[in-house]
Image (cartoon, rainbow, N blue to C red; front, side):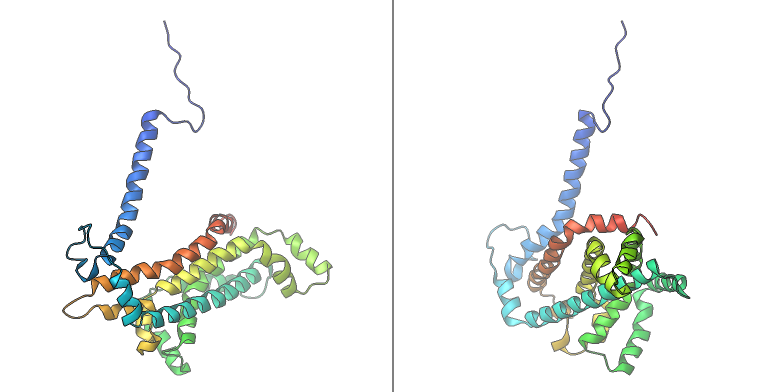
Length: 283
């Protein structure tokens, strides 16, 4: 007597495979969440949180009170919001304009322009600090919002321009032709017809430029010299002394810093997958 082999439908898994998959997913989730949970736990343990981080008693918000009331955290926070927001607006504007121009127009050097963006993106931060410092010094932009915004745009625009160029390539050229028939200028076609269709791609680039400026350390440390101009990444370094680190203040500040980034991700997340996949389908 022969038995008929079990044939599973496409996408159907055995119980053992399903159990192994879910076990791996749970383990990966726990590994990803452990650092975040640990930092939150330490921030709630007061000044001795790092000494006894696994003690589940004596939670308090004293570290958060000290950070908000006894340090310059709010000043650093405001500086970071201005710089990250400015980088996002300027970076997205330049990236969208460059990506659309290369996607739709054929002008001398349009290919070399994109390749220069790619080559510039390959340089590490350590190589760029000295020339950018000299340029900002000659322009009088050291220790200023504008100087740091321009610096962050120089880092984020190449990647964003490449991604938006790929996204604009997926938009039918018939839309541009219909705009010209209706009497729109090239800028009018771009602003009124293309930009609304490119919202997913623009959301991805806005999120990328914001996070780049929000979390950057090296440029901000070298270019911002006065404490009133510090960003969050620079200000947090003041909690670390030569002989002692204020772990309670550091962890509490780290938790507070993640809030704007999380909100930015929350508002942009529904466009992130569509923007990333559409921008990578055609180059």
